[in-house]
Image 1 (cartoon, rainbow, N blue to C red):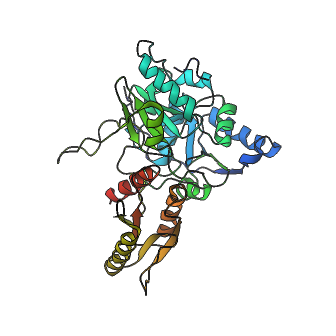
Image 2 (cartoon, rainbow, N blue to C red):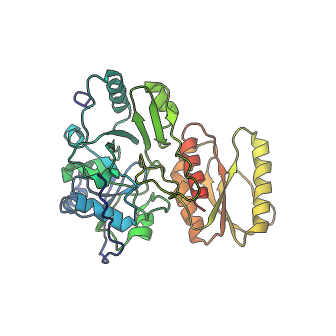
Length: 383
């Protein structure tokens, strides 16, 4: 696949929508060629082609998709999610032809940039890496929040790839949740937010990664990391050299909270928040013994201050004697993949149990831990 790779609409989606009947179809990623799976895919693909909305699994989280080349269909995503139009989307593709429909070829004069993009595609696609690239005119401005760059990726999940290929159109798909809520890693999470607001959902079981794709932009002289994700910055640097973490400009008092449009998917500060107040607890660069002591002190302090405290509890970690709150067993503290996969499920579970405050330790800032920290810190800043 290497050969050939390479005015924001002011109208906002309506704030009211008629109730829909959301069809739920079960499909196995291990039996994608079975008659049942092919029938489900055909129905979902026809829904996409006819301008509808379909929630579907990717290896990261569940996405809410519509035909990326149909502005009216994409508006359906904004309406269902109650998502503002300044927040751009990622376009998912299944082959070279779709890539060429979505992306303008990088000029040969920018050979170094082209080589880096080719190297990343060769290494990480299909997979959870989103590249910001110049968009084709066929991509409606609503997809990119009026920006000249479009986020594009080829998912690794067999159901996602099969759906896109059968639909025969690139699919714009943010996460399948209400705007600002926690991302969904199961169909139950999707339906909690969007049942009756979307046309169809494909149920293929839990998402594998649990956090969204990594988003980067390769420029002539540097590479910008907009969103830490399922592919760690260190993995990208091993392929193309250093990356620079994007920092959003500080909003001055009295100015609007948001710009006219965001430069990339995933940089909004209102993402990933539970209803409960989230309290992240720094654990980086201290010994395991000190981590346990700090954790127990923090749980005790929050227990005194909160009416009902919930905790994301790593395996083998203890709780203070007499702890009267609730907890979710998060996973092995040394296994960032397990922590990432169970992160949003844990926050949703504690929310459903009506915690007032959720206390959560912050993993290391290296590797996949950076993506987990990003989600937790953004959730905490929202409140």
